[in-house]
Length: 319
Ligand SMILES: Cc1cc2nc3c(=O)[nH]c(=O)nc-3n(C[C@H](O)[C@H](O)[C@H](O)COP(=O)(O)O)c2cc1C
Image 1 (cartoon, rainbow, N blue to C red):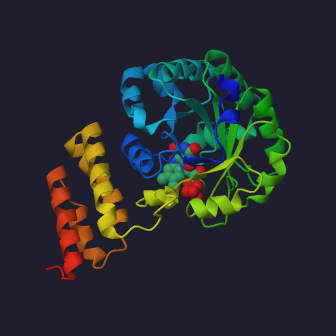
Image 2 (image 1 turned 90 degrees about the vertical axis):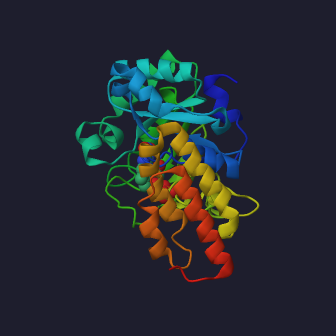
């Protein structure tokens, strides 16, 4: 499949783990793929300038395992020349696609005229897409939002992105100014879809696969983000609500992958927030939490999880 037709020919609906800084790293992608091998994954967003200036350091953050494929590497920035060198590196690393972040609302990112700020500068956004498309054989996609304050430029932006060579677009169905507590509005996406000839994915507020299938309508797929935190089973077709005993092997695997990738001190620090989220609904969660936020080794994590399982099976109070 050539770059431009890759996503068109990809089996539909496309279901993806959304890119999430601090969450969608290699370990979590492996875990989500183990729950549903047919999903697509995105990396956390990665600075194109960083990849250009310190390729070895940033490459480390982008490492992935073959079991995570297809993986789309997401980059952000505003300089065509750094996007081009980042694209070459991403292609060399064996990713299945490159995604250009044009939706991040973080203050620092917007102030630097990256992320969603590109919605205020369509010409630069299209130039970035064109430069990357010319530089790589990989499919180049774009992830953005409905718009800045409303969705009035959504159609012009997406048609321009398509003309510049984008081969898929994912839209988080909120504007830049809408906080997460505002319900995502998918209707502008359904209207947009018929105007585009490339795949269009919806995103925002989905609780799991069933919710995605019910909202997808004429779209080509959807991304799930926050609902997957501590709950990769949102991607499961067969068992979306496993009991805690069934969850334990996956939680242990998550810890193991993270610690293998980042080493015990960093891996343990990073797994704590995931452990707390995995365990937030079990009885006495608050008491277990105080242990989980202090884990220092993989052995300790495994032993806490084993104790949890035993306590739950015996319904014993924790002392
Ligand atoms: C902690 C966190 C980190 C995120 N990081 C990224 C990112 O690196 N790149 C990106 O395009 N979107 C990022 N997003 C946005 C998500 O990809 C997604 O668009 C948003 O969370 C809405 O989907 P959801 O309601 O399913 O979570 C992030 C969101 C969260 C909550």
